[in-house]
Image 1 (cartoon, helix red, strand yellow):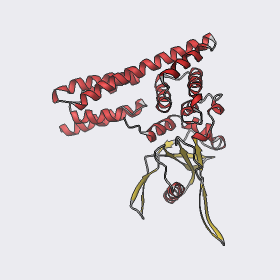
Image 2 (image 1 turned 180 degrees about the vertical axis):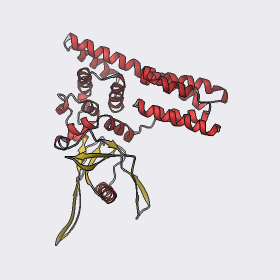
Image 3 (image 1 turned 90 degrees about the vertical axis):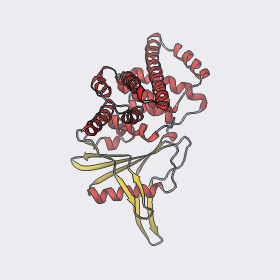
Length: 328
């Protein structure tokens, strides 16, 4: 199944925006008014020259020491390297400034699997004059050594360990330290699912490495070992259940017949329960009332990549409203 890398990163940063800024930009963190944080809808820009449409991944409205400001966060995933990226960043910045006329902090995140030397500026110069020197923040994850973040009690640091710089021989150690960080963080189930889901997307141990991990965990002090094993067991059971339900539902969708709508709804409801637990009662009631199989199909595709119950609630409510409008 195709992985939506941009979506994974965007969800992680939306949930842990404050922790993200603190981890990578502590000086910026000191100036931001976190009581005024608004994630704006995706801004679409048209490149007049080539007629292409581009999107800024995250656009945040905030205040810096009392003055209105914007923060652009653009994500370049492992399959999206582009030669003229710095030029694109400048275009995003200039068009946003033209529209909003306020201070803007531009940030670019590079999550490529290999290490690259990415520029952090766009320049226009002549032998006789420097016309433009546009600079932006960059985070090149593979250039960050994973060991430098182990003492950070920061959930976004834990998740991003899987995308940082480590050798093949260190994979087991990275997973072990990730589990130790999770024990310290004591996250609620929904946030735990987000962090573990992100980590497992990018670092999956093979059977030999899993056995080695078990041996490493057994060498920890008994109290920490017990907490990690309990956390790991619950996490794996939850992932197994979600995978089983997802597989069943996708199998039904592939060979669906009109008479299988009820079965599809039932499995989707089980999936939602596994994902969000008792907090999903309202969502489940709306799913149970859906009778349009096309809406159920579309909703399923969307819900499988959702980590936040707020977004799941919104998607289901929209599907329910579409059905109600169609019945009028």
